Image 1 (cartoon, rainbow, N blue to C red):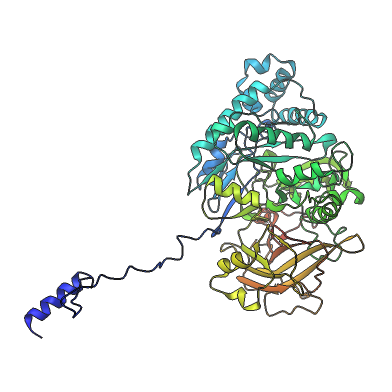
Image 2: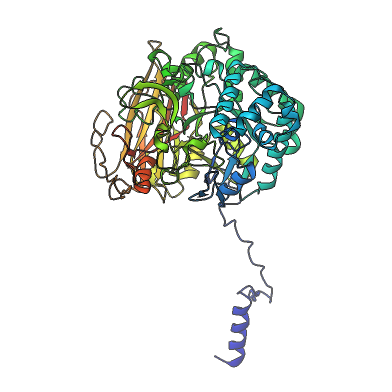
Length: 632
């Protein structure tokens, strides 16, 4: 090779090989071909990851939190959610295990901000006889402050305020919206404006959290709607419609865990006892796209008396009538749980043409201590009386004896370290998170962060569960959680693809289940559970069930467990063997984790105390996806 040839070669290499070369035809040169599209992502529009957060949590701006002694503000809660640290009102430091992606602080609309006014001795508050009384009670000590809070709760149950607190609410709402704007960082951390409507007629929980898509310029045009405005959920729907018409914004509501509603949360009647009509069913379906499936005050999926063949139904149960401080009667339980609500929705859809309960599932938290507390090893209770201490477990929440061997009807030990919402979205912004909530592409967990994805369609095959383009294929040929299938092709049955991955800092997975409910030709609703993937080489029988337990590695004395059982990941392909094309149906996925230490076990270990045998020491946490419906 001559020196000139070597130089020409070096020039060619240094210029990336793009130099034009002679074509051999009269010295003409040919331009390089334009590159074809290489990256698969520019045109991708489907949700690509899970964002973790809560749409139900309180600060000291809530009257009950503040009057129970909590002083942490929305700024404090947002700081913690972003990964920061705060000092709690008992002097202990708190930090999340991992930052959250999004938060909606939902302080009570009723008496919002009154505790700050009480602590400051506000002249406007002292000018009112009841405000002055609450101020004087708070000065006498924490116990008297709690009694003042109970008086406020009682006034809420009647729907009649003891004094006009609109000035206080206006000020607190302005501060709350300002804090949400301050901490919102699109693409990194999302804050959603929200509040809680706390309707509780006779002490029965009809609460909703109200979540806005909008920024403060629209949200601040209205004040939070309270139970003093109306105790009727239909009135809340009208208020939300009026907000949207007035501002051009968007808003949704999430009914709370219905287990303390005494049968009123999910019914076929209106608030005043009339049969639900199509207009009201449409309003519920439009304004309430989600249901809270789990939170600190117990789990709201189902209960053993409603689901006697479900071996996982007895999970963190709160079957109580707190209005009368007695156990709930069996006759009301159907109106308390989301699985029963889904079944009732099928009946109403057949009768009215609209399903008012075609809603997704999300986990709430409901902590009233100014932080989000969902981890078993980091649980700071619901109220100030449940902050970590050696004896907190036996602090009564409802002081009426039920069983002499178990003390009060409900104590702090009954509280659950729960729950979270996993949102499938493309980006971490207000608009993307809210839109995912609205379209129901979300799921609930009881505190951990397992990643769960499910699709249903008519033409999936077994090999699809292992595709490298699992999500793209699922969206292209089926519907995700929260979606709807209709008009089954002749001879086809719905096929489901499910993938589940354990929380990297949590327990392994025991199994994946599909929970099916349907409306049969007999006009009655039915339910059935199918195990569709199990860990540890266990088998699923012809009836679709695995009867072999996964085992238990929990060391209660040390509050530890090992991931030597279960699986880090499970996947499933399942075709419904009981499908009848004319039957309305719903399907949701339940992912069961292996047993792990409950927060009570961590308390025993850390404080060196011994709790009675009736206090549970282990927990089997889980995730519930939003259903996929089939509509003939």
